[in-house]
Image 1 (cartoon, one colour):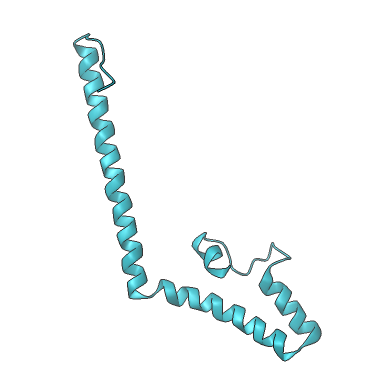
Image 2: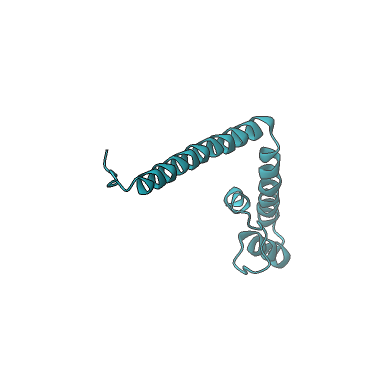
Length: 103
């Protein structure tokens, strides 16, 4: 729950969502005050802190950077392919020959 929200750049404790699990648990603590509800609320807070600790981990940073670099590489291939295709298209038009799209 928390990791998904953070990875989607959403606030893990949303002011807009009245059904937010942290809000509901905090409400239960305020109303009932049982040790179970307090432990549950503290567990949710630990989850929020843990995701940031996870994201600051060197191994995680290395993996995220590798994925980002792989995406850049793939986008570079796409860009090269598009430039080549456009260049070939312009050359075909310049010499007024039929364009052979299927190879």
